[in-house]
Length: 432
Ligand SMILES: C[S@@+](CC[C@H](N)C(=O)[O-])C[C@H]1O[C@@H](n2cnc3c(N)ncnc32)[C@H](O)[C@@H]1O
Image (cartoon, rainbow, N blue to C red; front, side, top):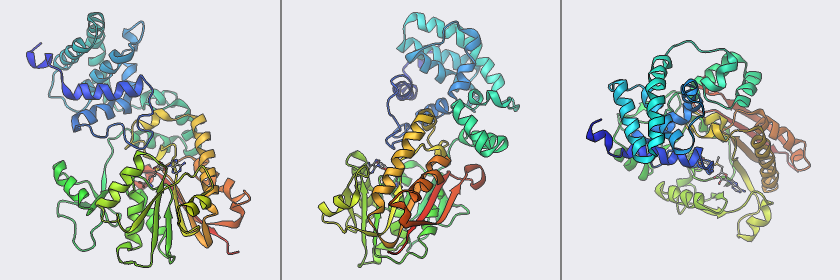
């Protein structure tokens, strides 16, 4: 083992720490809207994402070689080692990959654990590398392990979307996520390095050094945003009101999209309020609005949709009703698993039921703050019926919802649309 391999590899260390806190401590990492990989260097990010995307398949390679599966920190290091063995970079020989992994384990774990890892990895890593790219996909009952998704979710998708579509969705989720930028500056075209997409205003994230992209983001000229958000723009096409509330606004992606769609910079008569619950996300929202040059134009409001909205608006001296409210609710994120590889490990039927209950509550609390004939836009980044049409049906059958009708709806499916999945519903209040 050479001296370089015996030094702490900062990418491995950063990746190990993130994964450890996620897998071991079962922290809510990623749940509060920050991705688990946020702030990591590209190589560490790739390691964390790879392990999260392929966790159970990677673990399957050590099964035949261990009596008791590794736990805690050792488990995380062994997952990193196996991911290093199978990922695209074949410039390193298998011996080099295992030597490096064992040297890192020696620096962080006990001598016994190092010996265990050494013995297991010498067999499991070459096997994983040899079998990884074999094209044959196993039979459906093995999909949860092969595609590293919760079994109950795979089963649910096969029932809802069918076997073929589920295989496409699972494969989509395990492909490294593409990022897109929305160009915001109407006065200048985007740089020539920007590659257009089929969706107006959206570009593939250009292959530029990150500091150059950062400059564009900080100047407000561009915003990292998935084309699945474009439905909101389309649904506001004929909107002619003058009061808009974005009630689940942080960190502000859709707020900016709506503001740009409504040409807010040039509307002196317009009242735009962006709301989220008290906390760090509200601060991020404020920062993003300032970067976008909308800090003075959009009024920031800390409110809680777990309670009726009108009294909160009244207390804050804001108008009690709005011509349109956007409710981009917290959800199971099943439409964005590709970009958020940690989200699949938060999935459970119980969590889904609880989210659907909360979503209905949010809709009902927001509904009374809509002006007659106004528009309630309900949006999710979920593929699940319970969080989309299911919530909307419950709402329309509730006392407050009976005053609304479903005007139009859209469900984006990643394997068909080629971007994130999302649900969007336009609920029109019937005039009283
Ligand atoms: C899907 S995210 C919104 C993303 C945002 N619309 C965007 O495009 O950047 C859901 C938001 O709901 C907020 N939220 C969660 N519980 C809330 C509550 N009780 N009241 C208000 N907002 C809440 C979360 O803080 C989160 O920012």
